[in-house]
Amino acid sequence: MLELRALAKSYAGPVRRTVLSGVELELKPGDYIAVMGESGAGKSTLLNLIAGLDRPDSGTVVLDGQDLARLSDDALTRLRRERMGFVFQAFHVLPYLSVYQNVALPLQLLHVPARRQAGRVQSMLGAVGLGERAGSMPRELSGGELQRVAIARALVHRPALLLADEPTGNLDPDSARQVLRLLREQVKAGNAAGILVTHSQAAASTADRTHVLTREGFKLRCG
Image (cartoon, rainbow, N blue to C red; front, side, top):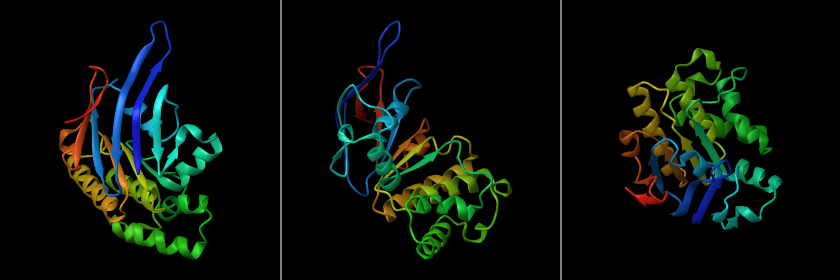
């Protein structure tokens, strides 16, 4: 479902800096992995390449049989909208929309009819334990609840790939455990593939396997 082949990326400067080199990875539907590494090891760069937000110097990113390097910017935007879901440390829940409206947003962008939207949104909110908070505004929610809204929004359109970037970094330990459990459960329930980027060994332990980006050659290796 997702294939990375000999992926490499560097950035120009006074001294050219290699961030990733020779990255290889295969993910199938239902796979849920963690990616760890020190700051500067290339975790964010890796996510940007997978999402098509940046282009590699060499190597390929193939999602659902499509080589991202062969797609136009418009086609990449459509692919992200239709086939990817994103969960971030900062939540990125829109403060002027209700919980229901936040979760419905991906479906609106895909022009899903309103009746079908309602069923999907209510089902997803129930799955993350927020069925009673559909009409609430973000300011009325805790950090853990906001992150659950973000998870519901990321998964409501049934993406093939979920990318979660430090999703528990702003949460207390109890909320973090709930969010990590939900991420795994929902990826598995939807037969999606998931990539969890984290500094936390405890968070990484919830994944099927852990890969570590190291400074020594910037290789992705099984940890």
